[in-house]
Length: 205
Image (cartoon, rainbow, N blue to C red; front, side, top):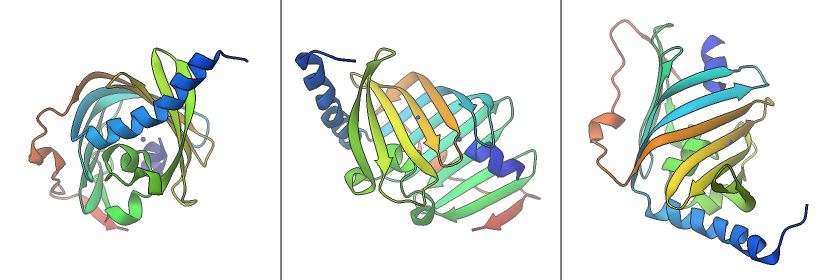
């Protein structure tokens, strides 16, 4: 249960010119996703509501399609690695590893949006969400009902990923702010491999 909480823990009137720019933000996001091969960044995460909450910090990396690494460093350590066929979730404190097949776990999740293939439109419905916090925002709503997420907001400033706001089916809202973003840089294959540590319990789902 602790692991589940932490993981779930883990988105007026305006002038015509602004409205047109916002509509273009959907096309800009789709283009950004198509043209992004790798991505690395630091993140600050804050969550409120639902069954979890709090703040955390860490690093992330993706290599499209299907590979990603999400590492929480503070206030606790947790690692999630997608190697293209499986997703590994490791909690050192619990000495526990959960592993599941990617196609069953990704669906309409934030990982599928950022690190998936170029079929995002088959998994999500997109609509513009205006400009705020120095970025153009787009709402992505999963077409599947069993993803655990109600909607995902993603903000871009030009070609730089600025943030995401995740709203899940438990009522939790998680805000991610990215920094030190490197797009289409070097992302070694070793980042997306995981071997369970000796002595860890491995649970297959």
